[in-house]
Image (cartoon, rainbow, N blue to C red; front, side, top):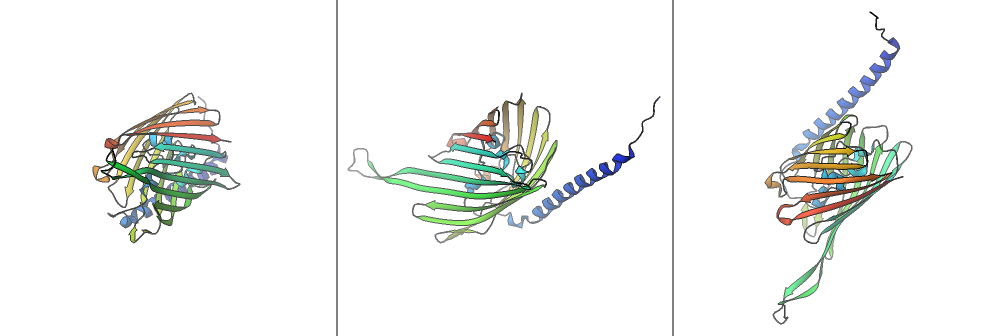
Length: 317
């Protein structure tokens, strides 16, 4: 019977790696406790600019918006600014959503690499220009058009993530316009993410002052998002929980199946209490990857408002 010899020279390396992992875990737990301790801000109240909670990728939507622990590409950037930690290429991502009531939503993300940081520029634009009508008994149809109703929301953001770190931050300017009235404010997002076969992340989003529209002041829609991801050979499992300053907590779970690294099948479920004025339901979608280009699709139910479809195009270079 042979004897196994322990390589003593490897012990310092093993201890160093264990210390790094322990420090990372301790850091993420510490930040999570700090954020939870800050949850007096998470109480009932009216909020504005809720378009900031709409995911900006079809992949994220198909996976029930549970990507706060994902770091595969810029599709997770909306959920956690630390999602850029592992990106090794520049990237562009474009998205379009046909929402209900003639509302459209577009977003664009550009990610660039530097020596020690990954930096992303993002633009979100929600808008409608629906026709306005008034009752007119003199008209054969009983009404007449008086132009279009203009409603626009914009968000311009800059995200910075150290390539060798576990954190990321985003600064953004947000503006809302209704007809000739408009208002703007600034906000920040901050998040942590520990990558690996079992990854986990936490992000606090939309931290900033109240926005004043005409004479009314309203809070921003702050969200605390915590998530985990388990990466297996052909399957990834996602679980997340969300805490808000204006509604009850929600949870989500999702599954992504990788078919020969070219076709991705996705599905998830959102558990959202009725008091949130949103809808429980399943989400489904798929993605196709050809070289460094990816096309993603998601189908999202919106209850009585009908169903929405989302499309994303991503290119790495």
